Length: 278
Length: 359
Image 1 (cartoon, rainbow over the protein chains, first blue to last red):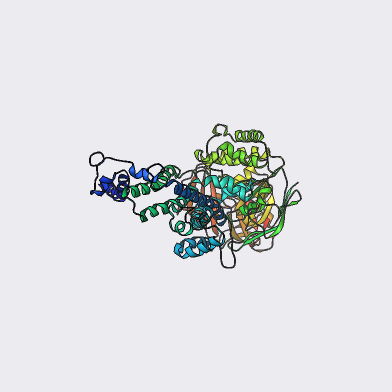
Image 2: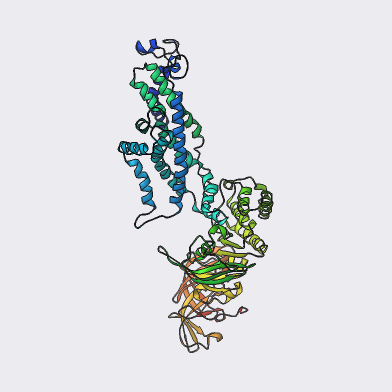
């Protein structure tokens, strides 16, 4: 009985959640006639699927706009911010997990809070300072500028997640590595990092999702040269664009994340920490 | 060529004094057993030697080199912990190779040494397994192989048998003796809480208590001449019974009641208050006479029975061969043979120990 209820609930909830996405997917394959004359549902029967929407967003003779360039920009910015955040964030987290820092009454916990507090502030507050900062640095409308700004938002998440993860790893492992001739940096890279794949995967996924979906900073700090995908999609929305093209563009923009979710799922296995300390 | 500790002290805010002015010279080629209760400072002493616990004052030198300026990774100290620490992502072979490669051995040399060491601990068939796929005893052997293969000049073992089951302990204890003896130039320090382990492995015994080394000597010396009641308690298993007594003209009186003629060895001592200690296997249960008491606890362990008796003088533990059908609450008469008594001052210092051949 419980199982049936559970299955029913999950099914209904999934339909509810997935419906807009399914609607977007079907709409992206509809021709003009199938959209403007009221709702149509069944392909081949009620309407003939067409690629008109997709052709409009990809390069080619029927192209309305080319989303491939913004995709590349988004890719560079996301990958860059994620890489920088993961590298420096996990190093910071390792330090905070294994060593004690302090000044007067302030200790590691306060440093961690400092990192997390970066996320408490609404990004709107930061828009103008960041704009002025990047202007002075001549980094407005550049990949590097956007990467740096995104990193400032992503690294706190990495630090926060990874401190917890490193705390859960037995200290004896790094002690042993040091006893066996590794200095702290080598101990980190040779023994702790290989054990941290699950944690880094989760942190990296957060970074990629936040980075890919960022629209606020991309909108305020870049203009034409570094147009990212979300901004490009929103820009389509601002002009008079047919629904089927809009649908195609939104579906196009979520494809990478969906793909990533499927790939990453298999990395998120627990249990590879067994055997360090009984 | 030895490891010398000079006035080593460690005090922390949380635990107070951990190591209290320890001075000792560990010579290479010997096995030193650190014995003491938990929190007596055994682990802290090892961590201090390894560099994992910074020392507040004093000096640690190895072959004349001061350890103070040497970070942990340059000290070349091999450690086997109570928990089995292996790198979970590496196979058995890689685990053992790792420290060798760090030490600068060539890939082929490292493999050779690692294989020899793994075979020595009997894990030759498990080279590619991950630690999680091994049993507890096997994991501890991997840790052991890793430490042995390094040929370090200092080898520290912190209760390495603690988490293993009885059978395996017996087996490894015997193997340890051989393995350690093959380490000719190394200072081997082995910490344990268990007297039998100390006595079996026994080379030199250091008894630790509250951060100090309170007695040092061969197993027989420490066993037969414990310099204080603390040492006697730590080194005796089953525990030594320690009772307050008073000596007076020709008599030794236990607590307020039972008295017996004074043993010859104690005749020369002043009258007054003392403590006596007696080992469980030296106490005799008597049909009549002797000290009367009530049995408070009975532990049967196969070949012997431990009986805890409440007497007017205090609690006494007596060990009887074989299984005995005694019940809690019954009264029992016990005799404390005069020639088996240790006499201690009230402050715990040893006055008289029984003759070793005094059966």
